[in-house]
Image 1 (cartoon, protein in one colour):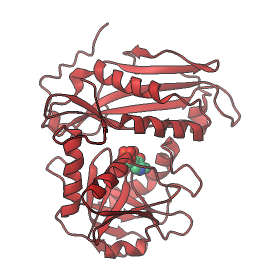
Image 2 (cartoon, rainbow, N blue to C red):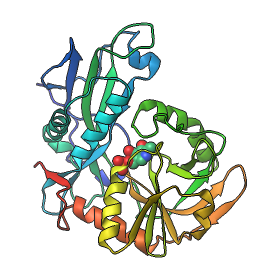
Image 3 (cartoon, rainbow, N blue to C red):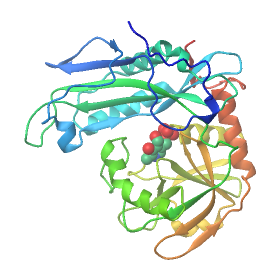
Image 4 (cartoon, rainbow, N blue to C red):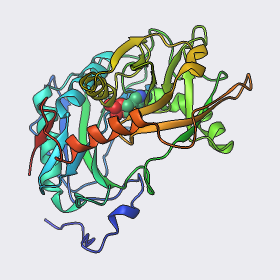
Length: 344
Ligand SMILES: Cc1ncc(COP(=O)(O)O)c(C=O)c1O
């Protein structure tokens, strides 16, 4: 087979952003006639699809995001892939799509890393290999109904460090004009529609110099939900506090940080977090696969004009949690919970 001709040897890995970069292979499964195909390995970046496919008209689409890291010992670790596989299953269920098995998803993720080994950034560059499993309904039709056919693809792309010149606090804006997800809607699954719904407020925030939008609960605008494509947490009085809500995506990073926080002797609280509690936090942050932790330095409420400052320096608890998680991902600390799958 003809490989991608791009020679990666001279790549400035640390300069990479978060963008699609063509790799050699992607892997796929096709669902037709009530069953999944075997895993297909391809170099084709394109898909042929009927113009009336359900994903194009009714948003029958879901995805995942996870990373593989080249460790200090040269080994390649995939972080908590089983968790992403299970979240993908719950998204598929929610959209009435066929549900792939956990094994199928994990196998595809492992395979795509192995097949694209030359795109895994070296240790010490801060870069990693981002995996994007994506799945959608392909049945052609006109009416709104569950798709009978689906395509599941796992591809990957090397991505640079989130913070190019070291972790530093971000500015966040609260938007009360647009909500991300409704109570009992699809906020707790990773479906494309949630992200489409967030674009407008994201753009508004960016224009004003904010890197992230903080969403409040859609019913009352009283409680904190999420921070862009990341969960929120606050630290105070020896506690790690994070919103509990049926319209928040269960972040795998947050789940990991809760465990690490407990290990550090912090008390973990998962509960509704009123926006009025913001002034009481000593530190707060957004957490997710992309950045692990983005400490929050400043929050501005675009409608009420209220603002909250947490300083220009990264708080010590945020820093400690960030290092603890990265140490596991890069093989610098014992992986005592078995979060990493060593694949190369
Ligand atoms: C809306 C939303 N919240 C939170 C997260 C963080 O989740 P994770 O830690 O699993 O990446 C993401 C990213 O996947 C997201 O899109």
